[in-house]
Image 1 (cartoon, rainbow, N blue to C red):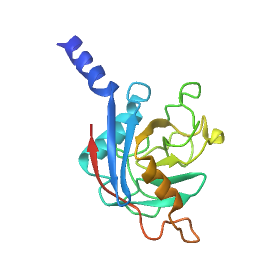
Image 2: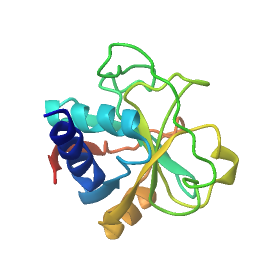
Image 3: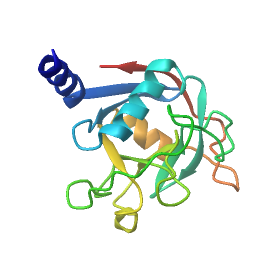
Image 4: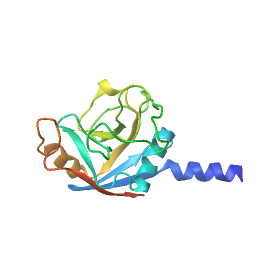
Length: 170
């Protein structure tokens, strides 16, 4: 039974993806469950619970990234499935901020991951070793383009709002 549980766990987590149904269209993201299991578990559980439904992308900086995952919309909130911060899973040789569409955990320093994440618009090597990469966009590139082109206020907040309406797990 223990072996079968391990097999099911490995099978279940190896090939997961989610679709973020946003106010600008759908973004499909492959989640690297086998490489960053704790981060993947947190993100997928938050997706499955509806945590991200109706949540704004609160920060958008062209040629850098768009950030969301904070239900307060302030950029200062959000919590993990464990009720507090969890450790980074940094694999700088395998998982890098190497190009458009990389999905990574936002944090406020080492081992402070909660629910916030960002998607980069271009290569950001200065983030390697600082933020846990846990996925990549695999479909919806036109939506990512529309996000990057969206107007923002002086505080880099999209105006009008860009929302995650719902999430589908595949």
